[in-house]
Image 1 (tube, rainbow, N blue to C red):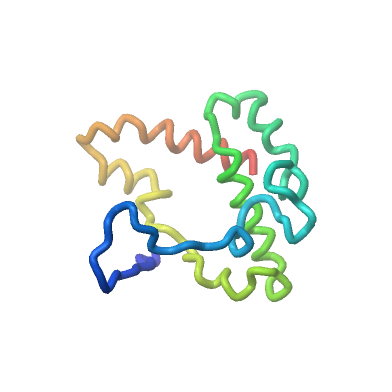
Image 2: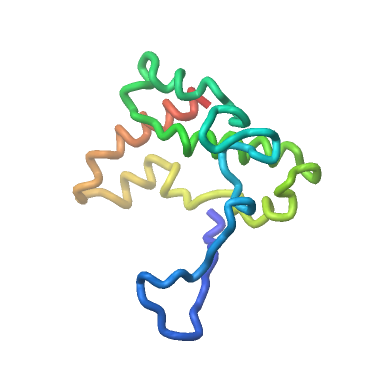
Length: 136
């Protein structure tokens, strides 16, 4: 993996309830695309309006997949495919290109989590990943 990340350091003491950063909704990349005529509260402007229906059908329904997260993945892919024409073109390069191998490599995850309470959840996690992949 890239091992990269982002970090912010405060120059003064902060309480847990202090707001460190406020990003206006107009500057947030979300699944619905208001800049393309979509509204946050409807399926208009979503990359895949039928996704909710598909997630409730057949063998995929039992995995309780996160529709909003999957719509956002599809939106990111859509924006990446637009390249320089994307409204978000200057920001897309800041998204890490990959993740730590422990997140997607089952063997490595089994080695890292051997003997922990989480070890037993690994098979279900990878079944869920496969269901997400199949649906997307």
